[in-house]
Amino acid sequence: MKTRVVDFTGAKTVWDFHTCFIEPLGLIGHECGMVEGYVYARNFDALWDLLYLLYDEPTTIVLKGLKKAGNRLPETVKIAKEVFDDLEKEDKNITVLYDD
Image 1: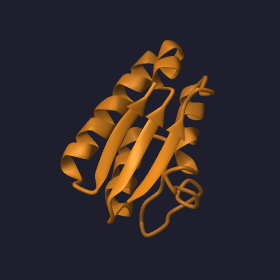
Image 2: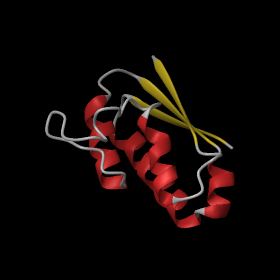
Image 3: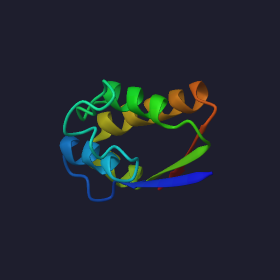
Image 4: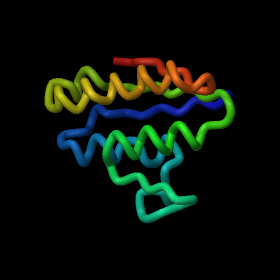
């Protein structure tokens, strides 16, 4: 099982928030252009598509610092939690943990 940690403690803008996903979730290459027909365009629909398709083995995603980011970006954090909660329900390979 792989564990990937996404740290949002330094995110001050929505762009920063989405940039936090790229390296830890293995989206490098996807943010620059199409790879296998999908691109990470720094929005939650693109994130869902890529994560649902990329992880074909058990993976734990740890979301760190959402509480702090939520003080600056409450709507973005709310949507992120909804996306990851839904993703965990839909994809048996993904487990999501929150580390505030």
